[in-house]
Image (cartoon, rainbow, N blue to C red; front, side, top):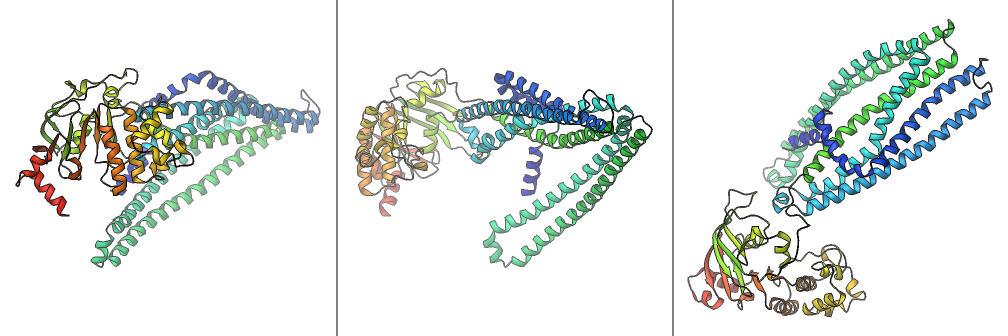
Length: 596
């Protein structure tokens, strides 16, 4: 499995440069369009920079000719030397503006891509997150966008520069030394074809070596994951031999690849320098016959050095663009997903808080073989307080997720205020539902920011009032920084009871019509529980409240309890009625819990 995963990753990383894949890269270009004029000016400076540098070999050749006694526009070698320095100075100025302008375009366009990606991610439905790992999504917004940034800031500029250098260099050579240029171009294709054949064969062997190493790594992974089994069956020697056998295959393939690579390098050195010797010989013959000056030969050598560097650079650029296509494909894949809602059509509307489940059936999209809810029927009037009780996996949390419209119901109808939940604007629906979870995860900012998250435009007085109602002000006021106290990552600097009271303050500030309590006191000590319960009683006033019950002692005061078992409601009533049924499921839960 790891072998296959490693292969897929390698294939995923690079893409062939065909029309279809290049169109994927061009899909990201829409983020560059707002800065197109800056980009075009950068291209002009790139062209000027490249062409200015290409005049250097020509003038350098004339320096040699002038030193040899030949005449040119300027017959003073000192003046020509200063001219060369002037060319370098002008070229460096052009290069500065080229780098700065391309950086300006790439930084701003990549900022726009990251904003668009993040905005899209937070608006995608829960079904999207169920199918993907958090690390993978973070990689999209970091590694993939960084790859695109390198492409737009450096790789594209280098691609244009190398192409300009290659084409303009060949044109210069054809104009100045046509015979020698044609001789060089005649030998060049043979070297390229042989290099491509060798290179393809070596890449194949390198890939085979990587596959064998991946297979050997699978052995390590399996052994360490099942170390108890290995030790209990005394399989240490067997696993060591198996790993050694796998590594021997790696070495065999790697040495074969190294042999071919060595032969290839030897051939390239011999052929390349042999080609240079042939060109120099032919050039020397032309100089000896008077068809060419020494300066022209020097210019030719410098131009061929530039051209050779461009050809070598194009190989790396080709690989970079292949990777960029893979990154752009993964970025566009997220940007093309359908978000849950549009942000423009939101307007907060009052909600009474009546909830009705009418023959609701549901399966999670990632686990379609398991029916989690099997024809759930219940009705909660506005302002009522009900509890959902039952073992883990009975479907209590799923009911809450459907109420928030995280997932669409498969069958039946879920209504809020007599209106099917799918007909509600999602922002309107969720802005009227408040949650106090069992495990509170706060954001890493200040206490004020965490409370105000429910209502970003809240005044300081409103935030403090919410904190007082939640019994949170008493501990906040004792902190030296008060509301500005940093809670740390995930609220780690606050105790469990303090985090719960901050969460309750947040819910109070939100002022929801429907309140969901995921047993907010189950993991607290007695003192903290009393303070939190007092805050919860304040919060529950005049609201429809749904309590997910873990500890049954906390739900004695609710209007009605729905007992769930394997996705069905098996009992309903208040605490006294259900506890009185000796053979009842709820009564049994009570006995089990109080017997502990």
